[in-house]
Image (cartoon, rainbow, N blue to C red):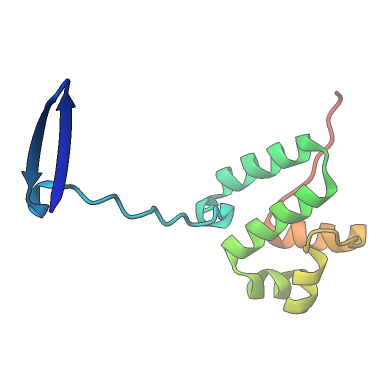
Length: 120
């Protein structure tokens, strides 16, 4: 039961409302963490994503993006195609990792990604 009292000068007006007319506060929204791998479902999207990441010129971001694409395509299959163990692939693409250039190129090749150079 909700009771609202309004006082105007010396006159008090009391209104009583049943619970059915009182709205309850909305439940808090449940947020889900963004996962780029969910949206990388075609080769064109992968190419655009990787191009944008390479333009950022950030080593950790490149590893993260390769990991996103690998998860989208299936880590076990990418690891097999790259000639790596699945755990090794996870370690190589972890934030802060310092994989060898050869490893990065193997993973890129397994993902169907080719790095190209152009004049800036």
